[in-house]
Image (cartoon, rainbow, N blue to C red; front, side, top):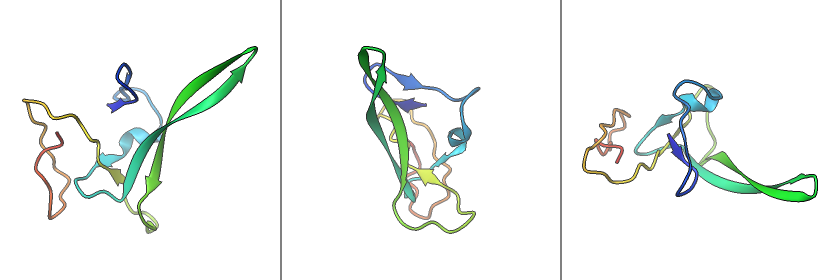
Length: 92
């Protein structure tokens, strides 16, 4: 699940591109941003939102790409299994 804004959540559980296989990590090597791009379609300009993943440092060939899912804090916790020595134990 990826929250684009207050009203839109993307769920690539069943269908999506290869990015759906990126894992969460409490101490990731990448971060995500939502950017808006103007798309001129006919007389109207539509703002489309895109998710962009940026590396925080140079990544080694074959290194797993990981980012913090930044799930909102909720009563029911989601266990984290990222394996990092400083793992927080939960993703929310």
